Length: 315
Image: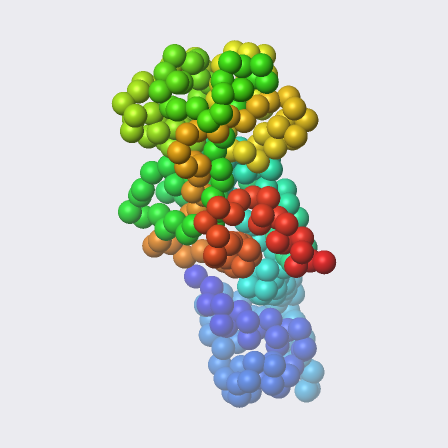
């Protein structure tokens, strides 16, 4: 087994062809250099240096070993540089999880912001239901997730981030579109296109119907918000979605948003990460950005308000 301290001493002695220079480089005494070289030669059972007067020469065996030692300590320098780059966020990877709605409507904006601050960090974005993304944290596939709080978990820390309004959408000529607001019991027989099980939206809608002791008439369930919007426009049913996801369709008059009698319904979106696991420097930097832009006063602030606030700060 090679002693790397001895190999390091040999490398510097061979590089500078001088025990004295090696001692200066390594901040040790010249006798210590001599002792390390003798130990290495004894362990290898090879002669590595020859002397002629005051000049030091490498033997053929010493030249061969020096060639390998050069590579070893070149890699050592590269490793040191890589460690320093990772500490200073000049390289590394950020593994994020989020819901499909956030991935489409918010994450591009946020990722651009992060890349402007840390251009050399690679980002891996994973999409799925809130429940899927919680599991991705537990499986170490992602470090941070922006999700609805679909379920509690003792190992996951949730930090409130935004509140997204859920709206009931229907075709423009739907019988309930002109009748505003509507009671939940009026939806008992309506075919409903539901978000998938495990999503925060599905959990919230299920709880809404349970409070009124009504079983929803689920026509279909899917994770694809775009598919939901198309089906609703075609008159296949009604659905509950985040308002921001249908903002364009509502503005263009392609869909109708029907108010629910009582108070508005909000989906609580949180920043999630594991309580007991150390976060990487990129993950910590990402959290700092999120904490700076997360609203702290109004409970109804959502994606649009947060993005407007970020743009105002940049200007």
